[in-house]
Image (tube, rainbow, N blue to C red; front, side, top):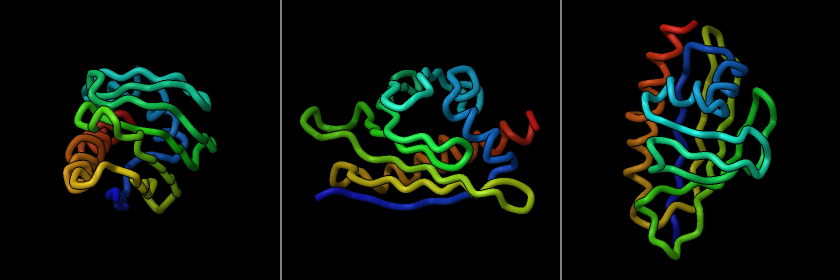
Length: 132
């Protein structure tokens, strides 16, 4: 059995700005405050948060959707990667960013749900307010 959840936030940026920042090594690092690497193509590898997160891009729909296989150092060694879908929808005053995170090792979902808010939505909001 695995965990899954959906979280959303309106961010003060366009879908294009968020999409490009998510897939850009320097921009991803800047918007989260922690080092990241990204090969911005399908099957391209990525890391985030000083290597705590790693995975590969599964599907990329420019400025609208990013799908990744995703795992952290807390996943059991024999656990498969989780599935992360990011949906970007233009909204009055910004972009609704929805994260659908599934196939997470059982018992870890609540921690990642909080982590998306604390380690992504909050710093991304501050970053995009300053940059744009």
